[in-house]
Length: 494
Image (cartoon, rainbow, N blue to C red; front, side, top):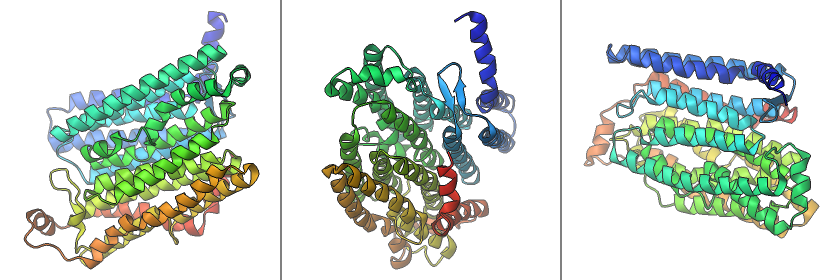
């Protein structure tokens, strides 16, 4: 291809790359503004940087939404592919970023420097690239952008726990990244292409034995399993969730998983081997390990970390079906999980009033009568995480397990029945730790001789903006139970 042709492709692709170009400019603007206002009043400094960051995310979201009107097509030759599915997932990660920023603004943490704002925008840029990547090299580079930004956000706080969490995250991430890169090199050696959308990928892989394709495929999938917190790449999750500030953890629990899920869909679709049974085993292991480990947790962040591992397994249930209904159900699940999980972190941050960065479950004791509205909202969220009506958590689980049952009827794979039965049994197990939250709120009195509890008791929940944010996140949890078609029809139209 001539240089002139390459330049023409690049210039033509820029029209579909506007949100990313804008984000790059916004990151530079936030960094410059930070330097300019560094020695000014700290309150003004914080207000300006948060306003710029939130404004940048809102504008980027508007540019992304405008891409629904654009015709589907490749960008930069075949590195990226922009379609309505990619745009939808970009909207999910944009909304998660916006919620995390608002959460941090209304419930600020003194231990977290403002340097995290441009890093978060950089992470968002990496997620945008992940949702559009159809070339394995681009998949790897975008995941690395997301991973490096995540390591920095975890270790940014000036505490020993944050440093330990960041190092653990880095080490596990480096190992999974190396394994993934080795798998990509094997796939390239077997096919001569890195393009997932090319028919050459499937044709050349089909010439090899299933064992070879399985090895290369699983090595490549390793990096995606790491971002999804799926077994056996889940070990980092509790330590990182405990170490990082609550708004950042809230973001980690949703946004990277949404983008990684779309990459996994595309990768599994491109590989000719049948990955249904291995992915069913991974899903089953993640659901079971996450739920059983969460039963013994006393720290709220660690509990939600193991909950995230279990929900990542539930997300995989729809993919295991390997049909269009399953992919749509998984998309519905991740879109609604955004509201459920981020609402949980906001409510725990409001009610538990973290002491020295810790969110202990015992700090919720007896708060049901003091803060009835917030306690009711947390109860709704706990029910949604369990997967019970009248919340959208029930609808999401119903859709993915219905797709799984339909897949079993078509294939007769016994592992799908095991996943169906044990997965539903695990939903019962999760009752014991999710319903612990309303139990502590309404049926346990505060411990008067506990210093930390006393500190919380005399600190009123005066964050009106935080309360409004929590309630705004709780409303869709109930709304999409009664009107799931509003979202389901949109997803089915892709």
